Image 1 (cartoon, rainbow, N blue to C red):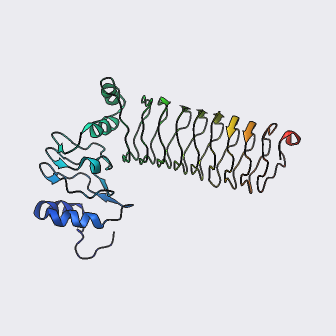
Image 2: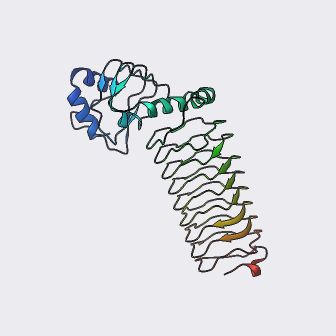
Image 3: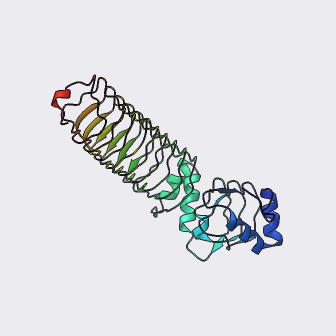
Length: 302
């Protein structure tokens, strides 16, 4: 973060500025670029007024104490709130979304207890980066446009989830079963889907550079205009998978089973299909296609 003479030097200086000059605090916070995250972790904001927080500014409030604070709810739901104390906060809007976020951070048992008495709402723009969701029941949970980089979904129940335009770089879905999960326009860079089973999922316009989907199964999935360099789909299995107009240079499909997969008009420059069964696959109009070493290449549509 660059200083213009008004920017606090560290997080403790930010807290002191809020206590002594709240208008100056919010003016300085507004100068932080919306793609940067302001580190306000582990601070005691208890009883302070945070309602002037600028929208579209990311704050990490993990481990901070917000007891009795007045808050801008629409801003606070976009902050990272791991282990944040939210007791007695006040805001002009409903606090239900904040309670749901706190439940997600509280662990599997805490989430299950909260969910037994509450219906999950649609969360938009939540910052849940690095969250451990192993074993959670996330049926019909929607986290669109949220930050979930490095999240761990292993063993979670993933049915009907909404993850459109969500950032999931480095997230772990290895070994997971995903059914009717909407990943449209999601960022899946370096995401791990190894051994995962995806059924009836949407992945249109998702970005999957460097993703690992070895031995994953795709059944009835639609991923039109999927993009990504170097995706590893070795030994994956595909049934009625629509990937038309995909841009997948340097992708690896070695040993994959491509039964009724549709890759028409796709960019497959540098892609490897050694040992892949391409019988019934549709590659018509694909660019850079090289089926050397593939099985049943004569039965593929090219």
